[in-house]
Length: 473
Image 1: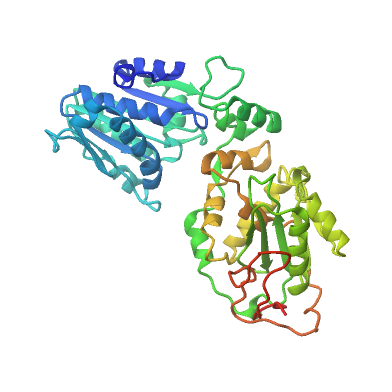
Image 2: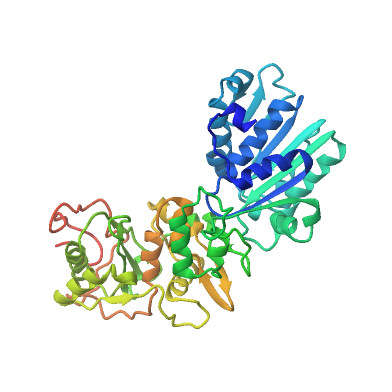
C-alpha cells in the first residue's frame, strides 16, 4: 500500500517488517529510540485500516493532546494530502478523519485527557468504541496508565477484527510498553527500533554521527544512550524532574522585599556553544529568581563586560559560570582581568554530595527542590517551564543522574540554557557580604534586573534609573 500510494517512499527494514506483520497480529509494540520514523509508520497503519476495512472505527491517543496534535495527527494528515485517492475519499479535521460517504460510521478520532486526569478518566478516553473493525493507536505510550490499555483490550472481545498498536521510547520499567516487552511478550509482535551505529538494521533516519557522538560522550551503558540511541530500557525508569503545574505555581508566587533582602545575590551564567545556543545570565536572591538575560552571538569580552557591570550595579556576592568544555573560559578570564572572582563550574565534574553522578545532576536537583520549597520563578519565561519539565532523571548505579543536554535538545529542538543558568546559582552555598556600597538596604517590591527596561546595543546598557538593588545610576 505504501509503495503504491506514495511511489518512491523508502522503507527501513523494521518498517517493512512491521507493515507485513500487521495483518497477522492483533497487538504490535514499537520500542523506539529517538527519531526513527515510528510516527509515520503509525500513520501508514491507520490509513491502511481506513482504506481497506469497511466502516472501521479508530481511536488515536498520545501522552498529551498537544503531542497527539503536533506529531501523529499532523503526520497522518500530511500523508493523506500527498495522495489524490485518499484526498478524494477522506475529510480531515483537527479531531477527526472520516470517509466522506459514511462520516458517522467510518472514521478515526483523536482522543485526549487532561494532564491531571486520574486512572479512571484516562481509561474513559478509549472507552465506548464498538464496531466490527476497530483499532487503537497509542503513541508515546511509555508514560501512559495501564488503565488506558485495559479499555482498548476490552474492545477486542466483541469485534470481527481488532488491533492495538503502541509505540514509544522505553523510558519506564512499568506500564503498557514495559509489560508488552516483558511479561506479556507472547501476546505481542515486538519491534525494537534503534539508531545503533553498529547495527546493520538500524533506523536510517537517526543520524549516525549523532549516535556515535552520544555513545562516545556517555558510553553505551548510559541510561539515556540506552533509551535515545539504542532503543532499550534503562536499568531504572526515566522520570520527570518537575511538572508544569508546579512551575506555573512558582511563577505566581509573590514575596515582599524583607522576605529575601538578607539573602546573597547570585548570578548563574550558561555560555552559548559556538553560536548554536544563546548565553543566559540568571540572577537569584534567596527565594526570588529574576528575569534572565538571554544573549545571542556575543563574544567572551562582551559577555564578561556585561556581567562585570551587573556585579557592580547589583552588589553581586557570587558569579558562577559554566566552564564545561572550556566555552566559559573567555568570560572567566576577562572577568578576572576586570578584578572580579568568577567561579567556573564543570557540569561533568565531581559533585559536593555523593548521591549525585555529576555536578550538573546535583545543581539541577537543588534548583528543583528550591522551587518545590517555595522558590519564585520569573513569570515571563515560558521557555524555562519547557526546559524544566522536559528534563528527566534516572539512576546510574546508586547515583542520581540528570538527562544530558544533547538528549533534551533532540527532543525539544534546543538546549536547556535557561534551566542550566538558574541551576548554576545553586553550585555552592553563598553568604551575603553586606548591604551594598552605601551600606544601606536598597529594596523595592518589583525588582526585575533583566527586564526590557534596558537594552544591549553596544558596549553597555542604555542608562535608565531603576528601583531595586543597586539600580543603574
